[in-house]
Image 1 (tube, one colour):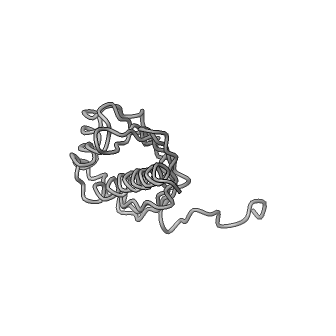
Image 2 (image 1 turned 60 degrees about the vertical axis):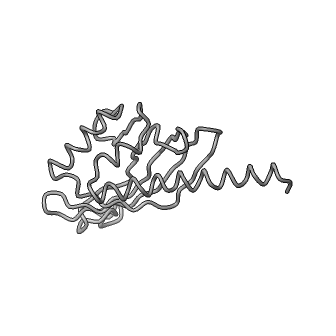
Length: 155
């Protein structure tokens, strides 16, 4: 591998690790209820789509939404991110970060699983979320589980 190839490969590795760290910091700031730190992970015109309401666009709207979750005591979310797949394209990238969720809602233990569908943009020396969409496979009470209790047709 010649020097330009090695430098390009090194830059790709550094970029991918920075993007993985972006997703890890998102989960950390959710756990810590750090609204401003969460907002700072997004580009100025960044977007978050939770699939529960219309997408939230722009830092001010993100700030209001994250703050509302904290104030309404709805932010007892504990995300665990893993299996991060990233495709680089210069100063842009896209990827999926798989997530397991733990939460308490209305006094009930909840479990969830899914992934974030992300678009990233390099701004200055760092990476930001351009958009983040949560795709849940399931989000259910812990004791109910996520599989049917009896096979279909055995009713």
